[in-house]
Length: 267
Image 1 (cartoon, rainbow, N blue to C red):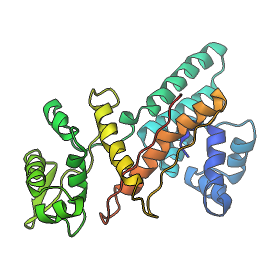
Image 2 (image 1 turned 45 degrees about the vertical axis):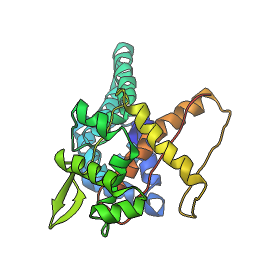
Image 3 (image 1 turned 60 degrees about the vertical axis):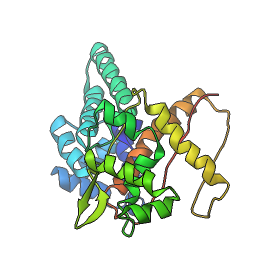
């Protein structure tokens, strides 16, 4: 659940509490303790007409583990509820809508550790092999050209050429005599002219895998009709899900390789 799915901070807090273990039992008390206020006040905020001030909202953002953008968004929601004039509410509503739009852009939410030059990006995203080999090098047992070529059924000469490119640009490194992953994350923005090629490369790999899929694979296609409101809500959910995937992936040890494709479009 992401705060960017909400325009009411109280609804977000209630959803956050409900999503905690044991349906959030005791969370309001812990919240009150973190804010240095009474449980009664927290109840009044959650279920009554009382509102947080910005000082309490700041402390609550830390308690909830919100990042900087999420915290700033919550402050906007608090300000909106506390605004005393229709003009101010309208101004804050525009800022809230703009923040929601910005949050929907993955480039604003995905952490990236390696900035690639346009020339390097053009080569890196020209084929699935560059990112595929880079990811595989992080898995123990696949730390040289021979084992990677065998695992991917790609000629050694091709793998060797790509490994040289990855090493040259810091996308892979040699540690203790073994090839491994370099800086931990790259991201190509939706505005890049290479984005279509990047998506196509991995979808073609998915098509090829469909013929020999295993129980660990999942392919799902569901053409549907739905309301515009529901379509908008689902579109807002997807960046949050991708962000959650990233938070799980980044600290996990490299043991296997997978590719995640998500398609969502009007047809």
